[in-house]
Image 1 (cartoon, rainbow, N blue to C red):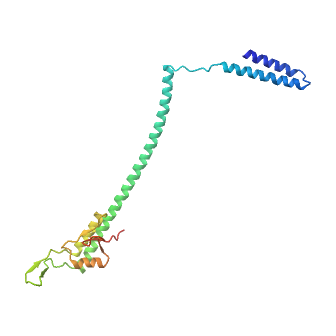
Image 2: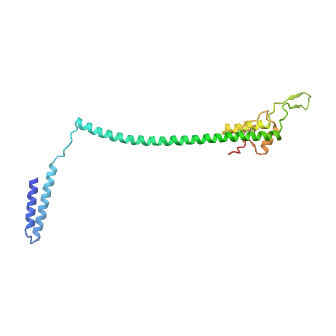
Image 3: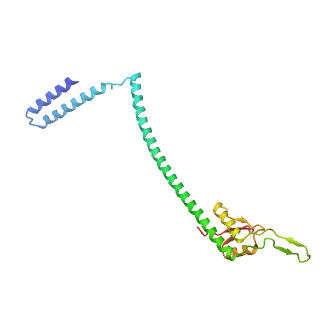
Length: 208
């Protein structure tokens, strides 16, 4: 093949040094170039590509390369996940700190509110008679009622329920709740009745 190419180059160089006086000389030059290229193409087509033998050593080398690449990719993924986990951990700790701070503030607010209410209620809403008795209209037999609690105690029960169980702040009205106090709280918007059960009331959430 190389000898053919050398001969073609010699002929081309000879042709280049001759004086071409007509178009036939140019045509001959082109035909010679085509023949050289055709001969080169034919020779390449006869060649067989060299195939690397897949022996054990080659397979081990290829496997190690793939393993190293896979290891590198996994290390990148692990590093990314660790970074995300660290950020999530920091965010969770920050949220917990904020919740603890809010719970502490709410607890202080609740204690101050109870103290203020207690002082006010003791002065303006005295303790009802714990041994209130009423007579039946048709008999002279006296009937004892349930032991009543103070308005302060009622509000403390409602307030504790509101803060301790905010998703269900309603309290069942018991016999120890003096009806005039219940009406006082409802009439002034301090307490609200359950929309479906009138025997339950809750404290209005003024802190929200």
